[in-house]
Length: 254
Image (cartoon, rainbow, N blue to C red; front, top):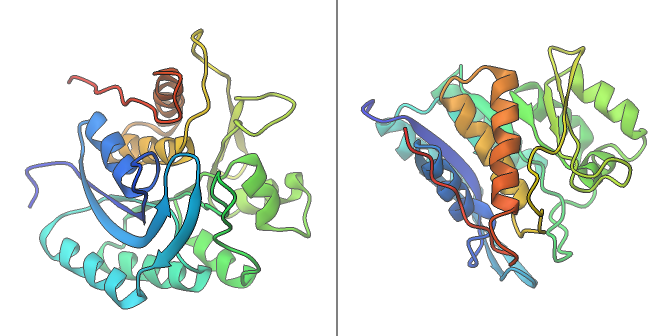
């Protein structure tokens, strides 16, 4: 089916809808693209507390993917939590079989805001293979420091930027809070400063929203720098939407 602009999220289910697949779907719909989803985990959480994560079997994840690709043309996929780098690599290779040109936006979620750790000691060789198939990776500062523990943050950025594009989220920065950095074409660095003059409030799932917004912009074939700037603006509107931990999405009219 090609009557709509379809996009896929592969991520976990958050019952509060602040993060994960339901948050991604709301972000996609706000960008006037039709969101499809594949569930990788069912979490027991709300916006302030995380109690458990039940992983969906790899075979079920792959079955979900196959059935969607049999029916829909999907140019872009956003990926959130998956049980291991090994399963993630298999999922990515499966996506590439269905669509060799698919653009993959990976949000490497290592830890929930409530403290639950998704990935502990993982095979970094496998993760390097994962990076080779991604179009963008969207870590925050805590995540990029943890991805390669033996490297400095500068070394990690340089290493990953040689493989794929990076949208480095600045919400966890201590020096320039909210100042995002994008690394693409191996050598180009784009600084994206905070845009809004409104108050910025902490939000559950804001990282999911940003990566989903970036994927949505890419699915609409927005030029890369414009896609990143649009993503920043949308995320700040989300963060400024109210004072609670659950943000409101700003639906766009086209």
